[in-house]
Image 1: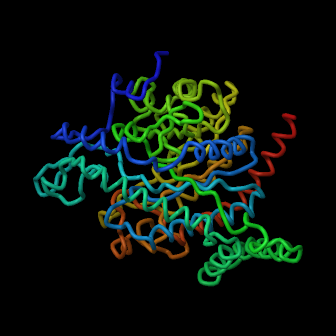
Image 2: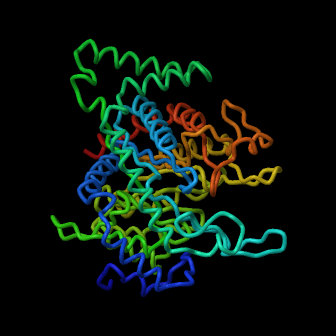
Length: 458
């Protein structure tokens, strides 16, 4: 394999990149961004990699969630807070179910760009470039908005920096206090439903009461009022990712400082493609989306390219098939990875394979299909003797109506009420938390099964 350089990706075929009219302006913008401070630090990415290495061994669980695509219009501290809050709520439920720590990673502070199924779209007989994300062009259907504008990268960087600043304050300043998160969940149970949900919350209440009786609380133990929270996005817009890649002064390694964790999408995972070439050289934890067209042989090749030293925590495989396709495609991929002895995190994205168009014209995702894909993911891994180690969802802390179903019983007619996404439909706060409760049994079985695997291996 040829030597990697920070711009060697430019010698490879590249997909889903915008066509900027003024390349000189693009180069000027990128040269300025290269001199901006990093958004995250190499040491933080290494800490995340260590936490993910524990997930590989069945001693942790990865929860990754946030916007389909962040927008300039919805940028508000309350929206950031609400999404962070739901991820904390979900992680508490999953921790109580699996009895393992949950690694919390947001699709936030940089998740702007989106690959589209077609380079253009038509409306009323007019054809324009597709909307590619707020850091590239605008949603409004007119010539000016749809023309890629390099200066948008400045605003994307600024928004990401502000978001990270607030997230660090939330995660370390007491907002993440375990007792507070527990009270939020009690509110959900009181308002929505009881039954099994209450059983889990009673378990959490008993555990907190026991710790309090032993003198272990957030007043005496800082770990109970702070959390480690990491950021992630798809490494799609390669010129920007290159501009944010820096040499770590302590190790001499390259790190993409735009996020702690970046992933390669299902549409840009070609072994001889530019996105794979770029990502193989940076030392961040990486994700790889695995869709129905991915063959076992190609997956192994990609794993070898992206993680040649088979380092635990380096590579997360994110399956995204659709509720009815998991049992058809996932087993062969798991078998291939097991046969090669590859140390990866297996995570489930139950969103992208379950997108449909409602009769009302809105794109949506039925909650029942999302739940079905997650449950099938766990079942297949258990059948194959593998550890299901993660959940990757598009969600928001806002009370939107973008996905049908759930205890709110959102119908296709309800979608127009609060349909605010700039790209694909997201679970709202209640649906995301409900999903965590509903998969608690699978998480529990998964945790017990992983312990048997570890014991057998030792």
